[in-house]
Amino acid sequence: MVGPQVTKFLQDFLNAQEDQPTCNPTAPTNSWCPPSSLSFKANFDGAVFNNAHSAGVGVVIPDVSGEVIATMSKHIPLPNSMLEVEEMACKRVVKFASVVGIQEAIFEGDSLTVIQALNNGGASEAPYGNLIDDIIFLASHLSKVEFKHVKRSCNRVADSLAKKAKIGDVFQAWIEDLSSNIAPLANFDVH
Image 1 (spheres, rainbow, N blue to C red):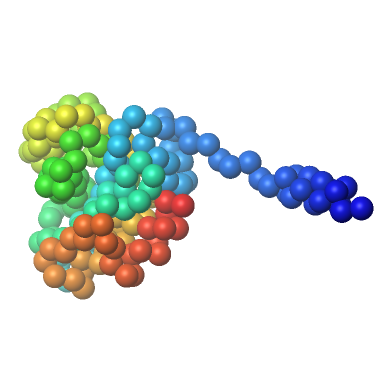
Image 2 (cartoon, rainbow, N blue to C red):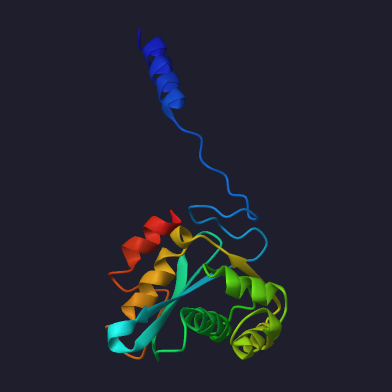
């Protein structure tokens, strides 16, 4: 009889399924989680190219479903420190989100020092405090923002875009279309 066999196969299938991980928006995770309260996340990262005496910043903005709506890669002169590169990447993500038309976002980066300085509200919390003050000023023009620290493993697309700046033009942006070498990483990171 077919009925009992189908039922057994279905039960075997259901037993074999692993529970899907749930995301706790306040705890660092090893994978991308959709934003809990805002429609967009905007990840940023920086990379240093010592041999070329330059650096790069990368930005990726996915929506609540994980679909990437905009990315950016920018080649910049080498700042004084990696911390300054991260601050410049954060400043760039806030500017880029505004240009794209986003008014509410969670800005995520893997530099705990930068995120803590932004959340503590000022220049006294970090070297190169003028950049922190600039970021806070730019963010004040948006409707609602949060700054959140994420593990490096949750920031791979932004990191790849920052590294892409080494071989790219001074500024590259993709709106609703990813560079062919970044698209697979974005899908892996988010889904």
